[in-house]
Length: 281
Ligand SMILES: Nc1ncnc2c1ncn2[C@@H]1O[C@H](COP(=O)(O)OP(=O)(O)OP(=O)(O)O)[C@@H](O)[C@H]1O
Ligand SMILES: O=P(O)(O)OC[C@H]1O[C@H](OP(=O)(O)OP(=O)(O)O)[C@H](O)[C@@H]1O
Ligand SMILES: [Mg+2]
Image (tube, rainbow, N blue to C red; front, side, top):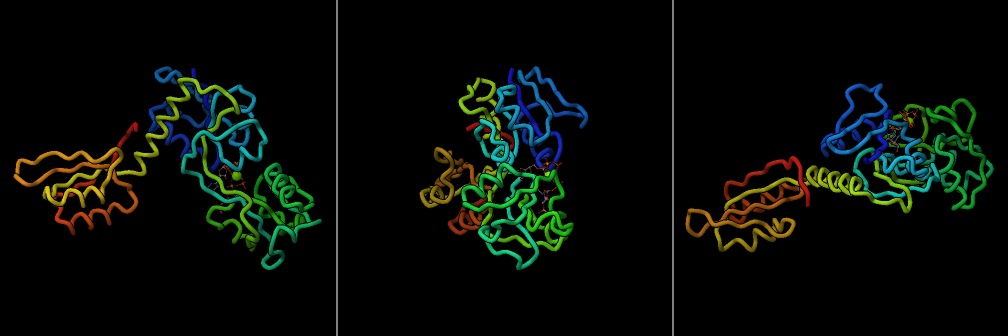
C-alpha cells in the first residue's frame, strides 16, 4: 500500500489534488477529510499541512509526498525531490522599504522576518551574513510596517502582497520553488511509488503536448518530419490519394500554432490538433 502525503491547505492544495485525480487516484470529496483510502490503486492519501509533509516523509512514516521545494529545504528533513510538478511556482526573496537595502550584505546586524527560518538561516550562512531572524507564521510582509523587522524574506509570486505593503524586493532570489514529489533520502522506490511517478510524468507530458495529424505530398515528407519529429519518430501512413501520406506526431503545446503555419507553408492539408487526455511514454 502506497502512503502518500498531500497538502490539505494553501497554494498547492488544488493543483496537487487535480494532478492526482488526472493520474487516476481518488480525490477527496470533503475538505475536512484527512485520510482517503483508494483501494483500486492500493494507496492511502494523507492530507497534511504543506510544511509538515517533508517531516512525515523524512521520518519514513509516509512513502512520498507533494510539497514545495522551498518547504522541503526549510525543513532540513532527510528528503529528496523525485519529480518537479510544474505548479505552485514562486521565488523566495528579500524585501524592504524602497531603497533601504540593495543586497544581502546590507542586512548584517539587521532583523529579518520570515516564516521559512531554516531556508533563510542556511542562505545567510552561505553568504556569511550575520543577522537576527524573526520567526513568524504568515502575513510576514506586515512585519516591517509594524517595526518588528527591517526586512522580510518571503514567498513572492505576483508581487501583489509586497506592493500592497509598500515593500520592494532587493538582492538575488534566495530560492526558486515549485510543487515537487518527494521521498525519504535512500527510501525504497516501491512498485506503488514507481507507478505514481510514471502516472504523474504522463499527466505532465499530456499537459505539455498536443497530437497533430496532417496530410502532405510524399515528396515533402522529410521537411515535414523536421517540423514534427515526434517522440520516437512520427507515424507516416499511405493515403488513398496517390502521392500523399498522412502524418501523426506529438508536438509541444507551446508554439503548436507556429508549427501549423510552417506545415501549411510546405503544403500540408487537413492539419488537426487534438488534446492528449493521458499518456505513458
Ligand atoms: N501565491 C503563491 N503562488 C504560488 N505558490 C505559492 C504562493 N504562495 C505560496 N506558494 C507556494 O506554495 C507552497 C505552500 O505555501 P502556502 O503559503 O500555501 O503554505 P502555508 O503558508 O503553510 O499555508 P497557509 O498560507 O494556508 O498558512 C510553498 O512552496 C510556496 O512557495
Ligand atoms: O506575490 P503574491 O502573488 O502576492 O503571493 C505571495 C504571498 O502568498 C503567500 O501568502 P499566503 O496567502 O500563503 O499567506 P501567509 O503569508 O499567511 O502564508 C506568501 O506567503 C506571500 O505572502
Ligand atoms: Mg502561506
